[in-house]
Image (cartoon, rainbow, N blue to C red):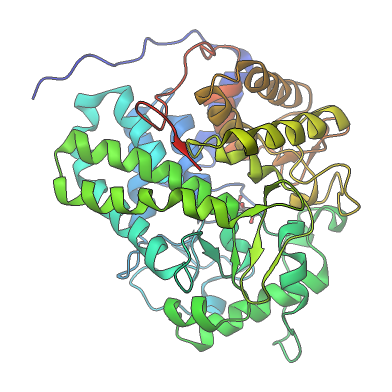
Length: 449
Ligand code: GLC
């Protein structure tokens, strides 16, 4: 097979790049990378995929290995788990003995946002010849995982993707879950001791009330023997999430492209079927009241109470709706005007906003990267550049923190955090050619939401 040469030129180095590379190397535990040594001592799903992007800047082989190792923990039903436990670390809670899953490699019982197919496409595009066999190996695993989302995480004819635990969204304590979580009765949960508070200030972490309910949902899942159909259909928490829905739509588009490259017609038809429903999924998440895409509680039939930054991922999904885009951009500018360093994870003008508490306000490098990538796909370069420069400035001034206070840019949560280092290398560093966009998710016209 002949491939056009797509090998990137070696880029010049930069001092902060060197430190970022060092963080990736230090947190590399042999084929997989820890998000942060003390706080998160296992392999996390979407963390690893951002890490693969970081590795791909200086070690493409290692980047592919990161993706492959995540899928070693894939379940028989297709789910790629949110945490893969390759050992039992007593300093982490809730570890493998709490989840009690029964697959060959111990994992958690949930999934996480499926950025993998998009990352795989990026790795493949960096050097097609090098990636060809590895793409063929991983492709069917990606299809199985996407199928799991499209069948096991949708409810009663709906097409938006449902999360059955706030952890599944990757945005643990976002106000997006508040109303639905309040209705989860945490009476009678087993006693437990959190470990996160030994690493990070309690004011930056989820509250005890939230944590009790997270544990209740884990106990419920375990009581079903991790029967995902039952958990989605009957469990105490089922919220349609714009974050996962848009990330999966984007990933479906990239998977479709890869199916075309590989010439896998059956997969192509299946993926096209999923994509045909993406507009309908977006429609179901549009709140006329808030004029934005908003999480929707399917158990109680109501939207969340405010706008969070994942609303802006509709662009990343390749979805365009002129009427709605206008409102989304208005929200985006409002978010950015209210803080020094956007994009805050939740509406900074909303009473639920807290600038230092995890997903209730802080700015995250990975989310900025995803939003900016989508904006650039639609030619919104000014906004995309602004996000990149803010991210660069926060990291340069304060270091590779887990997340940042949007009001003053100071870092919070874990220090020397792997995904922040990875996003620096792949996107925020001044050494990256910002004028070059990744291949857009769509070929030809973007779809109408
Ligand atoms: C937290 C984050 C989640 C991330 C994990 C590891 O749980 O909310 O998105 O994957 O930490 O970094």
